[in-house]
Length: 142
Figure 1 (cartoon, rainbow, N blue to C red):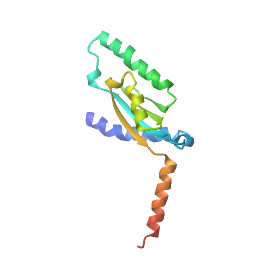
Figure 2: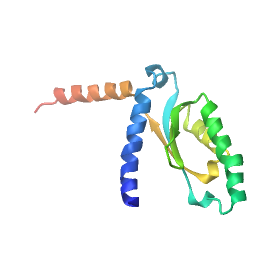
Figure 3: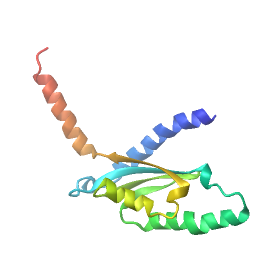
Figure 4: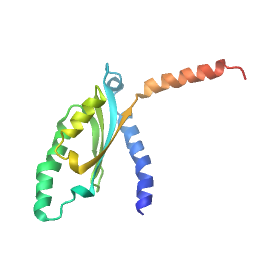
């Protein structure tokens, strides 16, 4: 079952990211030098509490403040926690990879969540690139 969950998770996250980017206004992807990132996070076993007191501390001091900060941050364009899981995804708008790193590392739960950050390119930009490829292929002799 665990292998099935891992197999399903990547396409599911890709589907979520596609929906989130598609529902984001086109102007966001084209704002000057703002870039979009798919950020995935998941609780690590290293951060799992072993007592009631540790659970209270973890939730009060790390998890809740991190979720609240993400909910209020204007750079977070969309996202949320996966239902019934200790994981989530978000679309983040930033000017650089460094800005993303700084935002993620500043979260109180940074050390107890595992992170995957993937830069995204806009649909219109990619469509333009693919149109050029089509033109080049048509120009080639068979």
